Image (cartoon, rainbow over the protein chains, first blue to last red):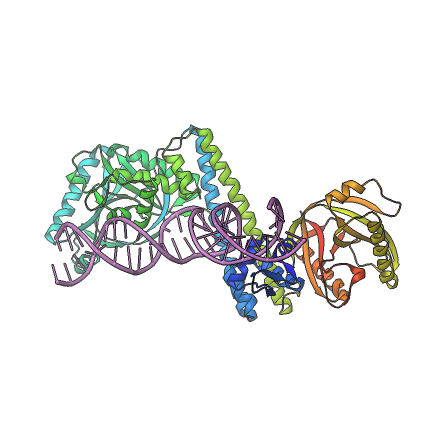
Length: 282
Length: 282
DNA sequence: TTGCTCCTCACGTCACGTGAGGTGGC
DNA sequence: TTGCTCCTCACGTCACGTGAGGTGGC
């Protein structure tokens, strides 16, 4: 019969740990002095403690270990617990791997420019949108503003006619490189599911009503400032994507967080979110 | 000016998180209504939040992020924090890797025998021991008991003569395979540092006094039961070592947790720890 | 008046580490 | 009597999730 101090040295665990396992009901001393509450352990208890420590070294929680050691589980249940834990570990490692890569890129950026990019990119998932839109090829960059204005105007006119409320205005760019002409542009608004279901069938020639699917992975950046500078943000976003070994898989989305483009007061103070659906390169 | 609910949707973070960042001083609303305490955010605040989230995706703690975002750190400090985190992540991944391997072996054991080995092996480090010992080649297994008894007797006699207290009795096996004869055996006791320093120079021909070095990594198993069965435990320990891709790097240590071999009352109820210093195979 | 949003506590998480404050045995 | 070991609370950890209980605005 050994007191807790010696036993903890033999077993290479802290006294606190032994006490903790006692109150948890995971590993109790052989005998407790009723008056002093001193815990006394026996040497034959060591193998059981070792079993517990071995399970802990697999990353299992104490609750799980209690299950495995107190009740005796079937092999099937045992396998299942271990398999589950294995998957958890795999996820964790992937997670750490990702964090590592992000840090590496950041360190690289610091070396490179002395300053990280003005924009921060994050990855996220986005839900589906119920869209109403007008899509056109805009021949030259000079005509861009006029075209966009016209397109949103037509769009809102149709929406008003059909009494549809706008949740969120956005724009879609159907190109993935920097081109000089013939921009495939889509002016769009997201509407509520109710309005969508109600009007899905009244589409006109030039008005599209459709579901933009959800994306599990979009790279996203937020630009706050002048409208003119959106292209710089977009450039940085593309740079980030290639640096992190992703590839675009869909059109660029420009979410008009500032409100409506045609109601804009000051084009030098807007806020938009740029999103590009991506996937990891193999 | 946006209320917390909408802002949290735009930013894809929970309301609770925004409140938490507020009280931490990491990210405060642009304006707080004094009467209601309602938090109001501005769209231009989104980029800052995004920067915070990007740093969080590198696995940094909120405290660290506060440092990086509120005070502006030098590039050197920044690099240092990221490097530190990188090392942490590397350690974590190694840890997870180890846990994975342990689980794999366990699963494999279940498949194999339907039952895991009776013994649990754990890895640990052991400190140095101040040893006094007698080492001999024991010609045959039949002579083992007599030899051991004699050796411990001689050892204790010498210890008594020199008034040395015994901390722990142990045995060292200087072989790593199962051999049939000529066992290189060492009967030893660990003594206190004081006694060690005091007697280091009075060694006799057959008595060795020396420091058994600390080991960073020993594979250890505890056997509780009959003395006869120690060889089975040793066998399982060797099996574990090779299964987990380790190799022995030193003599086997048999720690006599039960007390003194020559005072043993019941050889069917002993407790010993077997330790083998190991290293990972490359 | 009824939902909806917002608010402030405050507990719980996981496996202990770390005092605080007090008591038996040599 | 002085250290040493042991005891029982109880707080702290990290980044929030999750109620509880209550209040303004449509």
